[in-house]
Length: 605
Image (tube, rainbow, N blue to C red; front, top):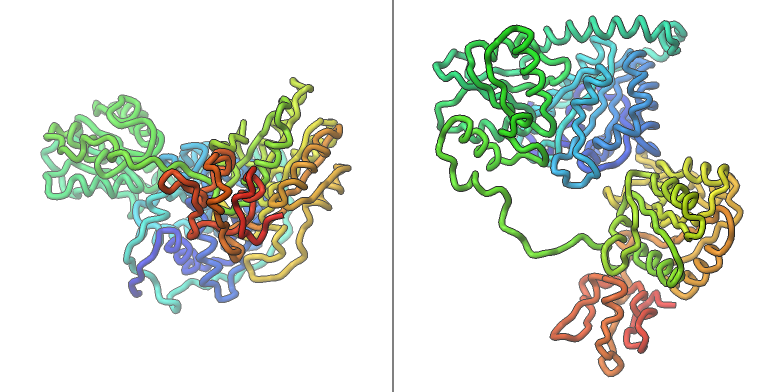
């Protein structure tokens, strides 16, 4: 063993490799992304690494590997589990041969997600064991436990870190390479009575699952990472039940104090019932501190009823702990102080940190999406139009002054929402904006649906040749894989033509006049038509010379600022100026200026 300073996600990856990982697949999404990327970075070639087109594909790939006796891991964020839930629910019945861990990173806050959903619910819903680490060290150790339990009980297991564990850093003990487990898969053994799901198989499997989970509840009551502190009995009649990063906050709040009894729940499902009874015995009140939902609180309330215990359970349901958002050291200290009857420290009374200067998120300077949105906006002036967005950098197109994202629900939804609006309002020009990565992940089916059901809409593909929002991961259109292979690019244009889209136009959005003319012409056609705005992400290119303001021509009308909202154009002493450190020389502003006062750009038309 030796020490290394690691991010939580890197620790999870390194722990999985130490456990004998053979295959890892996933779809990028904060806060989970670095797990797969770390695996790829340290991979010696013994692990197959894949960014799949979406979470469903990733989970099914991982299942096939586990059917063959491999140890597989699938990574995603909490909303990605929604995409993978179809195979997940059936896989729970089928089971696996090799260890299979489904790493789902939850995002309390939410910091970078659409929802605050709690994956612990999915564990009980799918009847799959769930592990919930509280620190970087525990994440490293527990991921190895997860593989062992998965393989022993022939079931996939869920591994649920949250953002503060995923992105936290710590100096932790890790294994030397000679201590790594080596897993040599047996290979797939044909047995249709096991691997082919039928109603009778599912019925028998359901019986087995309930028996297994009852056994696991007892096993987890002895699991070393489910802890009751202090070990010796105390006079204090109050207790705290917690988990994950909230346990770390709890122990910080209790430092240097005569602590109540603390129950750390590392396996929320199956719940360690016997250990919970031991914890509750002799206590008058228990405060449950958890993220995000009252899972522990409900379990303890149920156990009190089942075993006729008079312990009062407090938490989110009783409004002793806030019902939404992530916990913090300060909020937990305030909750515990109020519960214990201690004086609440001033630091704990601050619900929020002092307000920072307003700095709303904005598309990068030189982002081609800005040009794409502006071209459509210009083309549709005076026409009744609706613009449905999607998940990605381009969601920021909703901000002023662009104001070009009217809806955003989940990945791929905009294509179908556009169709729904169009069916009700046939006099509306309906546009659906989707990125190249999201097109491959989840929008293709929407495009097929549009063609098949004779929608009247314009599909706009914002192709910047990367998965920009989550860190520039490759996708089928980039021509490379996470294994470092150069492969044939999947053409979005050919896919669209292949499913029956007759009009497919490709244009560089930074050529503004041509883009506006293309949008006007294509939007007037009937049926499903597509425009592919193709220009690389500003982060991927070498910037051209920044724009230059000709002060003799500039009238300070500020049209460039008011219409584009580019952070590379600023006001200095009331005059329009270029922020050279940000400007990429994309040339869009020079095409917008009505007085020709902006020049010196290399990409201008």
